[in-house]
Amino acid sequence: MNLETLARIREEGQANAAMRVATGLPGTGVHHVMVCGGTGCTSSGSEKLCELFASEAEKQGIADKVKVVRTGCFGLCALGPIVIVYPEGTFYSQVKAEDVAEIVESHLLGGEPVERLVYEDIGDLKLPEGHSPTLYDTVFYHKQLRLALRNCGRINPEDINEYIAVDGYRALAKVLTEMTPDEVIQTVLDSGLRGRGGAGFPTGRKWMFAKAPAPKKYVVCNADEGDPGAFMDRSILEGDPHAVLEAMAIAGYAIGADEGYIYVRAEYPIAVQRLTIAIEQAREAGLLGKDIFGTGFDFDIQLRLGAGAFVCGEETALLTSIEGNRGEPRPRPPFPAVKGLFGKPTVINNVETYANICQIILNGADWFASQGTKTSTGTKVFALGGKIKHTGLVEVPMGTTLREIIYDIGGGIPNGKKFKAAQTGGPSGGCIPAANLDTAVDYDSLKAIGSMMGSGGMIIMDEDNCMVDIAKFFLEFTVDESCGKCVPCRLGTRRMLDILTRITEGKGEDGDIEKLEAIAADLQCSALCALGQTAPNPVVSTLRYFRDEYEAHIYEKRCPAGACKALLQYAIDPEKCKGCSLCSKKCPAGAISGEIKKPFTIDPAKCIKCGVCMETCRFGAVVKK
Image (cartoon, rainbow, N blue to C red; front, side, top):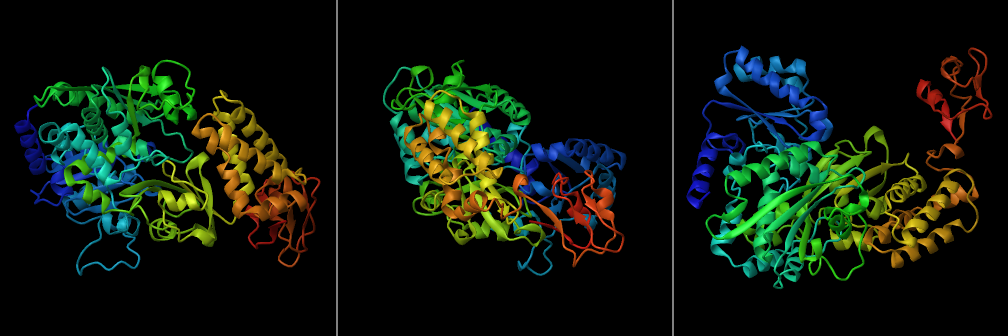
């Protein structure tokens, strides 16, 4: 493909493809039905919706006026399957197969949106008079700034022409024809972009380290997203795979590499499928392979599938796995930029980091650096989950406060519960208490309060969550996923888990807290890789902010949140009990007895602590002790 062909495809795409309406260009009476094809919505039946929209449009005789596009993730996963109809921008949520005929007949044929399916949560936002709210007018999206996710939900990720129509591969053309490798690296340096995989190392500096002459070099994409509750990278690969391919080619040009690898876990079948299609399309178009744009630059990409080992998210373990060996970390130095894949200089970045590169090249370093904060530029994508009204993908400028993310975007804590903590950084991160709700979310601020950015998982907890149990959950994960290569991680995490398990079972002893702190300190300074060194973080942060809960478990044999079953007792408040006997009838253990119209009681010796009595009682008489 030459530059003229690239420009022609872009112009034709802007005038003719789905982006015509998504970018606000004049329409031609054609409706574009954008159906979310991310993993979440696909699991809820969105693929079937695509088939039904096409067949129903054919049945109504308007097939030539309806274009059905299967996109990537829109972000508001809690309301999937999502369908957006352009040019109006009508946002339909939780669409079912039986709703399709009504949408086609009422909206696409009759021009009247199906109001019962329209999502219009605008809160206190002030919209222009007569303006109907679209996707980005809603509370969930209003404070977001989608840079890494800019094309997710806007284009068909399996059509390279649609990517080209939104300036795809123009950044690669620019660096190959207008910039030297040093200028590319300097631009990335000046942008302030830091690695989005967790550590936050400056991306441009990493590229600069790999710039030294060598006969063979590699570019690697870390798509082995293993944190519990994290799905940021998966969504980018599903919704905008070409952005990663283009950025890797730019990195290859900058450091002098001609070959790249994407290491993605096999548990992401949709991402793997779309990456495979994208690589084939890019090769066919001459955007990967030999002599790209006739400049003499060669670069190609291969996929490598991981088996789901968490440790392979650590860069040296990932490289070892690509080489065909057991995924175990290597001592550093030497760092991968000096001696990486197959012993050659290697640049390795994660998916979200690459997703920002093309925009930095096209818009300039100053543009990117103007977003976010001075030391944490740009935006960050978070997978927002847990006890939150709006679960899904959130992309905000660095420096946005935790309170804004949880309440202004996430909609707050459901069921009238109180916010207790936010866990960021996955198993390597920490828990942030309510007192720090106004903390700016950036690398330095999170580190200062004992947490970390991590890859971007953000799990919200309410008053019913036990922080000792949360720390135990993450230690269970780490113990399960430890590669076992180094003694501190292999034995230290297991010892910490044993202590936490005893505490949650009511068998905690005086001195357990001090033992946890001592083992954590040893792990942090002696484990071989960053995963082992950060494994104690959930315990350290919960001890820092919720020490009283540990003490209640150990000394009072009580779980303040009522979450640890071994320390839990159910009782019936005689003042509230109406004697209806419903709890007694539902109790599977026969632990509840009493007389009709008189207060019932629970026998602790028989109670199996299943909670059925509390769920059954209509008067709030059953309480936890």
